[in-house]
Image 1: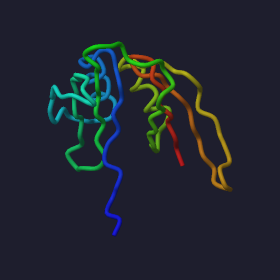
Image 2 (image 1 turned 180 degrees about the vertical axis):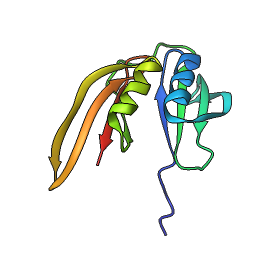
Image 3 (image 1 turned 90 degrees about the vertical axis):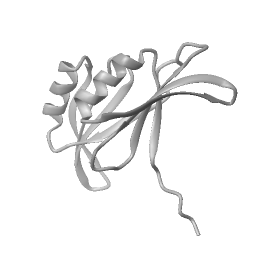
Image 4 (image 1 turned 45 degrees about the horizontal axis):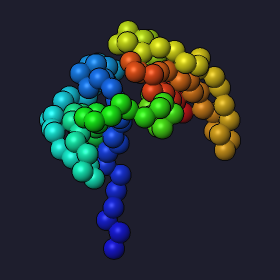
Length: 129
């Protein structure tokens, strides 16, 4: 039996507080907990962000002994019925526009997508399907 299911993403950031403020303002997460732990012998500090209604969590992680890796290691994806409104909220929360919303045909389905950068420069794809 395969009972595995996707449950969280860990995004490595430089500034936990700034990233927490950005993602709680933009996506409606709340901070569930903040923990110090270790991963393969390396100390980390993590902020677990969750939604009241459940679903996958976003965990913001900072290595205690090193800067975060170069950008491009991950692109977060967000679906919304209002990509322009989402982009406006992202910019108001400290993000920047990376690419205007464009129309695409994906397997015969009309898709509108654009990209923003979060408060630290990580890409977020905004999709209306």
